[in-house]
Every structure is written in structure tokens, then in C-alpha cells.
Amino acid sequence: MAAAPAPAARFATLRLIALLFVAGWLVRSFGVGAYAIPSGSMLPQLRPGDYMLVAKWPYGWSRYGVLGGVPLFDGRLWPRDPVRGDVVVVRDPNRDGGRNVVKRVIALPGDRVAMHNGVVSIGGRALPRLRIGDALVPMRRGEPCRGVRREGPECRFRRYAETMPDGGTHAVLDSAPGASDDYAARVVPPGMLFLLGDNRDDSIDSRVHPDDGGLGMVPADRLLGRAAILFWSTDGTARLMSPRSWWTTIRWDRIGLGID
Image (cartoon, rainbow, N blue to C red; front, top):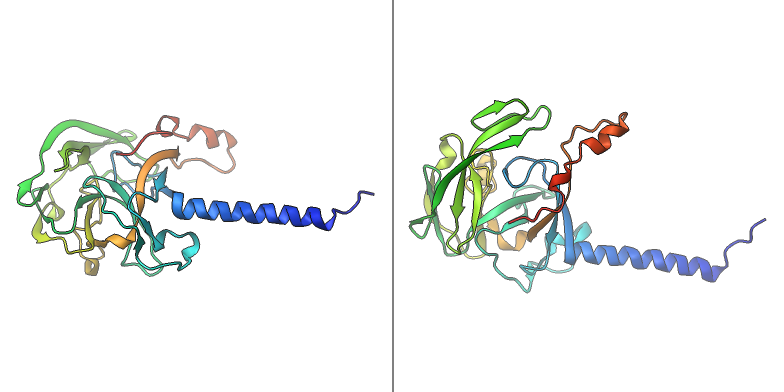
């Protein structure tokens, strides 16, 4: 019969488990968080089924980013404004219990932001927007195509290169005219951010007032961090009873992609 573990050995094991738990909690609360992409609002760069790592230190630390919702402090510690064009994760201020939302920072406090026919302007100057080649994006099973048209398993979108005042350029999708292509000019209040999805025809963002189910402008203390890299991606068609599908549905070419 095997001897029972000595009390000292049991204590050492429990202490190791506790230390690992605390270390994991600290890393995920203040170092790097992992978040899933549930929708197509950030196409073409981010797709449903992508999983990304988010750096939590670039803008200071938000109490909303503390794992488990532990109320250690109010607001943000050592706050810093993001750069226009950063892809960020924020806690939705309009939902009880909160949900995490990934969008792109377009305008900062004091900026006068507007949209006309899909073109964003900041401070009265239109952001340069250059028409580039269409994007063909694979669609998950049952996912509707909200672009120009469906072509087999893919959806075609009109794509543009949009350049921010700070010089960064990113791709946006804008395939059809709509009410969300226009936004009356207004100044971003102190402590707030104006955020847009890159898929302009399929994003509920700062253009839509919270009373209408939108995100509205977001308090900066809701910033959780800056999107950094994709660490996992799957097309969502894996079947529990088909082990082979667990591997064939992984999008290996997306793993390790940086986010800009």
C-alpha cells in the first residue's frame, strides 16, 4: 500500500497551485488577455472564429480589465490615450454585465468627427480613402453575405485603403450606400472615444446612439487594451463526432498574424 503524502508535501502542492493561479490572474488582468471575434464587423482583417491576444498595458490599466471583475480601483491607472487607427478592445458601457467589443479608434477627445457618403473627416479634413482591389472573404456556414454578392463559399466586398491623420493606413469595407454612411459633425467630449468597425456596412459602433441599440461614444476608462496578434482561428464547422474536422477546420494561415 502506498504511503499517504506527508502534510508538508500536500502543503507544497497546494501552495504551487495557488501561486500558479495568482500568476495567471495577474498576467490576464494586467499583461495579456485573450478574446474571440464573434462577428464580421472588423472584416477584412479580423474574421469570426479568430482568437487574438490583447496587450493591456499600452493605455494604462482599466478596472474593467481585471479578471473576475474584482473592483481593485476606479477608472484607469496611468492612463494614456490611444493612437488614431489603433484596434482596441473596450467594455460596452451600455450593457448590464458588459460585453467586450473590438473596434478601431477613429477620433480622440477634442476631435471634430463627421462622415459623408462613407468618408470620415476629422477636424474638417476628409481622411484619404483609396479604392483598392475587392476583398473575397470566406463565409462560415449559414453566415449571410453583406457585401456586393456571394461567390460560392466567399463574399465579395468593395475595399478601400483609409489613411489616418497620424499616417497609418488600414483596409475598410464599404460595399453599399446606407444611412450609416453619414454622421453629423460633432466634437468628441473629454474622456470619450469615437470608434468604428472596419466593415462599415455591418458594424454597430459609435455612429449609432445607445438609445438605438448602438455603441455610441465610449468612455476611455472602458479601454481594455490594444489588439496585438492572432493566436488561433477556426472556421466554426468542426463537428464533435468527427475528430478529423477538429483539425481540418483550423485556419492555419491566420495563426500568428499581427493586427494593425
